[in-house]
Length: 149
Image 1 (cartoon, rainbow, N blue to C red):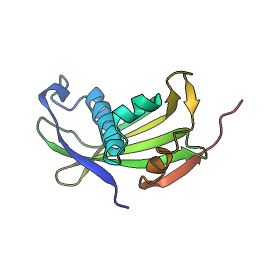
Image 2 (cartoon, one colour):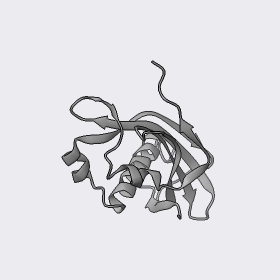
Image 3 (cartoon, one colour):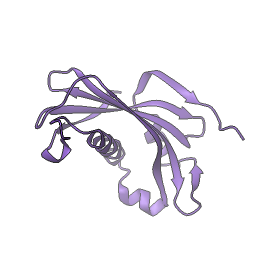
Image 4 (cartoon, rainbow, N blue to C red):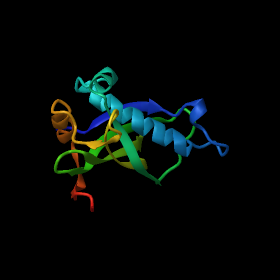
């Protein structure tokens, strides 16, 4: 399967004081790209709300390789870098490429599926689990071991 991706443009509000795309903008676009992936597979925000489950990010790692300036085009991919056996925890990688195809930045987000009522991590609903598993995997994909108790 081909990597899911979307094209964005660095917006005025995305810029920092140095005229580069700001940290928070990369994180926001990464989150949007992840949710657009699920929506493209028929799992909309309304479905998350209906099932009372949602993604929660516990850690983001942001790596920079090149600057992004105002109105530059970015293609943002969504790949799976890790997954627990039950699917309750995941690591999703978003790579940002310039219009010329050069790697600009990478956001790796570790998270899980939060039961919005019980406020704990749970395995994804059976309608969501296959959508998560069908994501293109990174070359260094690794199974996430069970948590230590």
